[in-house]
Length: 442
Picture 1 (cartoon, rainbow, N blue to C red):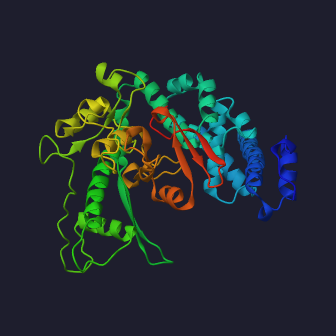
Picture 2: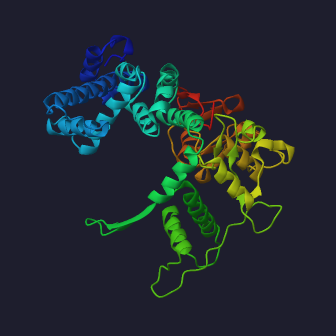
Picture 3: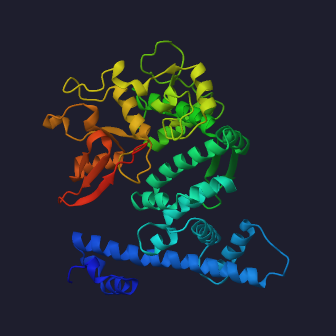
């Protein structure tokens, strides 16, 4: 088979022709990359065509509606999604609703549908746009739409997850100008909407418990679970059988809520895993990421960061409340109080370095991974055994899978200055990804 080239697929017909004539079982590395480009061209066209179907479906529904009836935009989207489902254009109601929602978002912000059709962005980028538009009033939405060119440039230059992080901050900035209490109101609504749902899977018999919490209570529960999980993982009591990571997580949850594995036997009292030395014993360490301008301007600067360690945004007032009863770890001051570069003095990252890295990264350094920072290993980009230093510019959080790919499969990770970009290289030396690092900001 001759090598596939995207140059032979300048349009959808050519790209589809290349794919129809191709045999993936015979692909070499270059063929995979070129075929992927053809797939993106075809998929972009199909996703954009879905939007056109949804738009026409909505227009026909409006034409057939009795005069004098003006449904809400949500009702119009429902009509469009139901029509897509009825005509067999989608296989599920959720998919049909998603297409109708994307069509509405593209109708609000120009340029995104054309970029989707040209395979410059994905439908995931438009889903991000639709989610954030829902958080805005009409006046706020108009301000965001006025920045359509900037939005499109950001979408073209990043994966969907990176675009969502940037867009959420932009939306928060706009809302703060129009509605100073918007963040507090949103938190209050999240608290009110928190719930616990339970059901039994009739096929497996497994019991499901779904807990939906506002960011603050969710963070409190998550930290208690993580502390108990760390205690169980470090338990060296003789006779304790080895258990998988997932089994330990379940046991940590059982211990936290006071449920024993054995009926009528009380669960052990959950203990908090050892924490870094703190100036005031018995109080939690508070690591809320605050932008330095935010501090200097007394919380008035726009576009500043105020979020939990996992990237969850929180209102300024909530950060103040949390700070009342916590030991403040001044990430923004960095080396003024603790050394962040230790060279060859030690192999493992220090607690101060972990805090500093978590100020840079929400989770795994692999774009699109999604594993949170607390579940990552700290990786030396210049391996310790090859005389690498334990310095901040040579450290990055990696999930277990990413760590194994590097140490066992021969992949390589390179970090740019100030963690601005990352580069993943395959074992054969070809570049799998080179672009912005998935950090908290560019």
